[in-house]
Image (cartoon, rainbow, N blue to C red; front, side, top):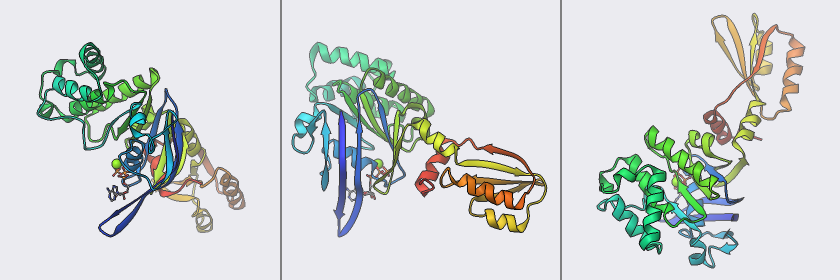
Length: 311
Ligand SMILES: Nc1ncnc2c1ncn2[C@@H]1O[C@H](COP(=O)(O)OP(=O)(O)OP(=O)(O)O)[C@@H](O)[C@H]1O
Ligand SMILES: [Mg+2]
């Protein structure tokens, strides 16, 4: 449904040159939640804006349902709807209902069709009882729900959400996660950007980690977890550990001493390094009381990926 090939974008403003995206490629299909994960300035928003034709890339191509967004933007946009960061598709001085009528109208909706879509999306986002409230008076969480509801009105197969849970209360975040899963279940492609690990863990079918404009890895969340699990161990020593051994193992991780117990927290750069580690241990033969593989949460995995611990 969506194909991005070798996307590059350089911004030039006031003499400064910023290479925001340096060759990103991926494709995503209907029925999946495709997540772009990356730290500040990684190029997430630039990628999303390029897909929507709001930013003109230097090179590369983007196709939505086979339509080239750069050559045929108007036609391609019929398949997409988006909520961008900050710039929300909401008018503060209109009520929830008026916002839906106004923005629905801009997407060519009216009459019965608009009314039934309004009811559907309001129910989905849990805002049916807020229809007459002013958008500007809603909490941030409800404003974001409204922004998403508006984006869903035209019922497009592709939905792009830039940081949909940024700065939201827990309840709204949970609600939005549910809605995203629901959308994928009914066959839509949801492409979102985030640095919210909970969102990745709970809704993503695939995660593309980007940093400094480049793709670092593109995998299923479970694969990412497994990959890092096979590389993180905790070795607990029984008794003392010689200086010589500490020296030899210093590249593998760091020693932690806690109440007489000495632990080495190992972070292997590749799964194969485990053999080198065992060779060193064999040469000094310290007494080991346990070796466990460490359970990492997504936050730790993300930090490792971004720091470049991966391949
Ligand atoms: N209009 C612009 N003019 C100049 N530089 C820009 C512009 N928009 C983005 N940049 C720069 O491009 C890089 C990528 O920005 P982008 O907004 O795509 O990152 P992001 O991953 O969305 O970050 P964040 O998590 O902060 O939203 C950054 O270094 C940013 O400062
Ligand atoms: Mg951004």
